[in-house]
Image (tube, rainbow, N blue to C red; front, side):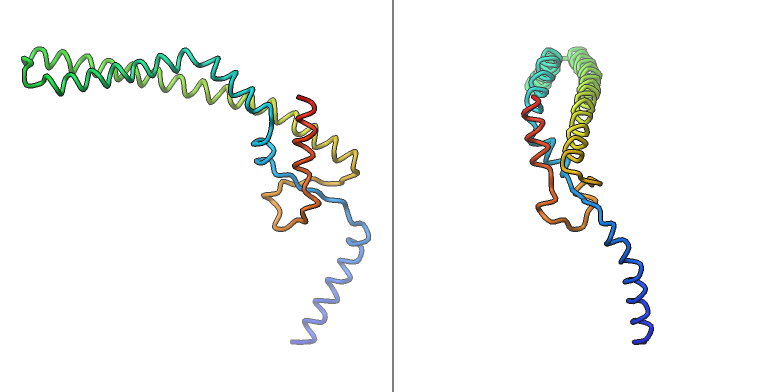
Amino acid sequence: MNKMLNRALMTLMLIGAPLAANAEKLAVVDMGAVFEQLPQREAIGKALEKEFGDREAEVKKLQGELRSLMEKNQRDAALMSEAQKTEAVRKMESLQADLQLKGKALQEDVRRRQAEEQNKILVKVQQVIKDIAEKEKIDMVLQSGAVVFAKPQTDISSKVVEALSKAK
């Protein structure tokens, strides 16, 4: 058993020696932290709010109308005739269908626009990472989530955020 362990260790040393001689400079970047700290993120959020603000207000108005109609129907149900109850139910169903349609369309449009803006930023982030890697002669940059352990000095996330802040 000891003999086999010694052979395995010797094999690892023989294989590892050339790899150590050609050691590459590695760095890690925490993309989540970079995106959270970007100053452009706030500007994008405001632009999207402005772009979709009218539609969001319309959806909220529909929600309010539906809520008040439901409350009125509950409150006045005992005093309403069957025809009035049927009319109220139809009106609520129509309002609810309209709300669902407009709400879903709004969510899809907001999600699409957020993805577009995120992709624009991602291109900039990747370019900054590439520039930093070339400047510091880094051979490989890995996402921090893909690495089990990395020394803090190999993390270039703050440098990426700093460069993107200057390029604002």
